Structures are given as C-alpha cells and as structure tokens.
Length: 153
Image (cartoon, rainbow, N blue to C red; front, side, top):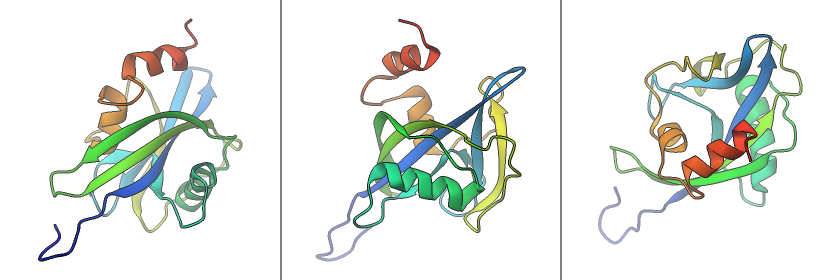
C-alpha cells in the first residue's frame, strides 16, 4: 500500500488462456508462479509494456514464460483483481491456440513449473486472477464466455 501522499496505482496486464487439442480433449497451458501468489497456478500473463498492444503483450509473455508461440489472441473478458496483500490489477483476458503445441516447455525465472492440464483436472491452488476468470466476476459474464468457448450457440 502507498504511504503519505503517494497514490497507489492499479496495474493493467494481460493473461492468455493458451489451449491445445489432444486425443483425450482440450488442454490449457498453466504456469506455477514463483513470486506474487507463489506456488499458485495461472495462465501466462503479465503487465503491458509502454507502447505495446495487449495482443503483442500476450504473444511476448507466452514466448518469454514458456517458449510457446500462439495464434492471434482473441479478447475474452476483463477481471478486476484485488489480492489479499492489497495489490490491485485489472486483467485483460485473451484466448489463443498454441502454434507449437508439442514444443518442450521452458520455465522462466518468474515460474516454478509449467504444464498442460485438462480443464477438469486443474492443479491447485489457483491464482486469484485466474480464479476470477474461471468463476467471476468478469465482464462479460462467465456464463456467456463459457457458452462461446464451448462452441454452443
């Protein structure tokens, strides 16, 4: 928290839900966080660099954190993430497919591990922002996003 006359700033970042198809179903790429939310699992993401578009930030973060190249990121929703330690971020969520889904995953200095997981077998604990993405509140609402992601009209 800021002290004195300092004003706390809200961070603006991106997160990208990277998927791949497997013979047993769709999987999502997750990283285990080393620092903020240490030990929890989330998607690839980070702060947007000055002058960078959100889509470019998604592509950069995916390559930096895992070595995975992604398709054109598609906007999914926004979450307003207020963490237990007072840190406040607004996250722009995107979805993308892995262009090199069989690539060996690398782990950046920001992560403890990375892996592909089935949607019905996500590791725990889940990072606050990813939890908001999964269960809400999100804008647009979770139910609408799930309907679109599943391909149901």
